[in-house]
Length: 344
Figure 1 (cartoon, one colour):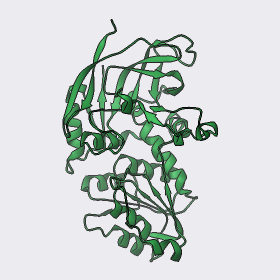
Figure 2 (cartoon, rainbow, N blue to C red):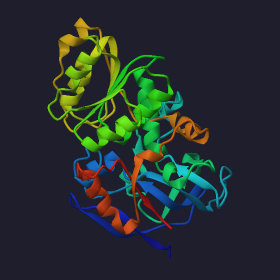
Figure 3 (cartoon, one colour):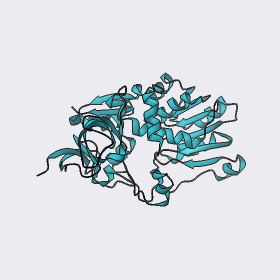
Figure 4 (cartoon, helix red, strand yellow):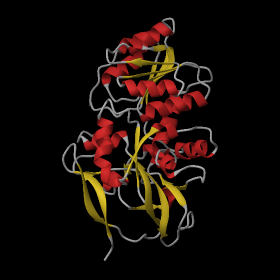
């Protein structure tokens, strides 16, 4: 009889429940991880509210996991028991055209563990060794739990094609938006503007060296960015909220020939965009799907001390207070950016 451990799930919007789940021993090529830290993702929040387009309820929660190797299955040679590791939570087919060319983030059958019933908010987690990466000794488990979202930001900034000294606007000062700010500064960006509706997030953006942070409750951020740039606009703009309104603002504040990137998960199936801007200003709109080799890039940045993401961890909680973590992220006055759940 395999042991059972509690795993966080959502059966009805707004309520976290723990249900026992049987955990089998690792099979060939598999690794059993002892969970040490898991952070709450924005997509977890969508699931928590029953609004995730690809995770209908009931659904498991959590995928941003760092931990230790507890046990290895036959044929595992990448890690050993006791190793500190971080999980890359994707599941891909490895056979389609996209996987064959190395773009596994575009896999025709891409999925994630939590979408297949194994959420990360649980004491033990079973994974394929190919998706388990060693965590550098100078990187804490709490920071390790942020490698996955950092990979998303690395990929998105790459999609923007930002060059040394160019300007950037980020709509959304949540975890991804603030990571984009940190990465842009590290990459040598010129002006970096952020816009959000939460006062404490805007304060955090200024602490992290944003050029300016605009309160967007009146939907005036694009106009303010244009004013700050003498009407020219910015070279690149990233939408990290998931709303039609902020995407339109990102397009409006672009310089001629600029690029906008959609990072946020859109709740609407259809959008209305200012089509004439694409012709008049020759702007480009790109999507950004997760990450690919960016996961190793994110780990390297942390290992080398090139990036400090500790200020983004605003709350640390034990597993039995996970509901509180989601409630904090829901409150605009909480100042929560990244909530990390620590396991013993």
